Length: 264
Ligand SMILES: O=C(O)CCC(=O)C(=O)O
Ligand SMILES: [Fe+2]
Image (cartoon, rainbow, N blue to C red; front, side, top):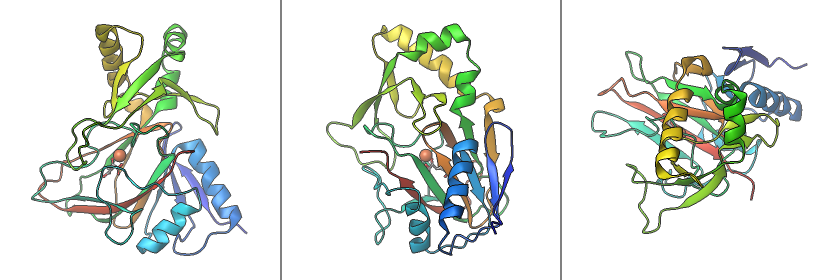
């Protein structure tokens, strides 16, 4: 018997998962069902999952090895757990521009599993997710062809909350990424970390990146998640970009993220 339900929120991106208690050890079949839904819908949402850090880590570990963030401080007892926090003293919040996580690494994370434990009392603090498959598919075939063999440089810039190293980490990635598990193509440049498209002039690269950043903001590629206490968002970082809204200042919003490591 498998009671897990998968309810799409839009036909392009996002599904809510029901009928599962993530505090319990999941069967292989349950993990497989969630993994299939994740690959298809790109970001999954779970409600009412009051997990300990150990349970959060154990759930993440069913989908791959966990990543330890190179430049952001983590939970003192659990290096795999990142703390996401904003309150009346915050000068900035994590992820308030469109991005994929940690693409300045050679092998960026496969995905992230974020759980919020404290929600602004009057609403707000939603997270937006945009399907990079849909963004790619909406481009003309001629422009798709032009982008197909392009490579972009990603680098960690000065970001609040990130440690600054003398030589910031950087990596090159294809502008159009073929997802290794689904075989679907998606755009893989993001305004958080992409610095330039190689082999183009500075002006050409900048004009094309600006166009693509505007393009991915099309609401038709997006799902917007309204959090409740102990809800979870689990996104595929290879085909989704996200943005955390910060419309709730000075209220507090708090949560924890575990992240799935990319291939070695
Ligand atoms: O707080 C959020 O909703 C997302 C923050 C973020 O960008 C992340 O956890 O990767
Ligand atoms: Fe993020």
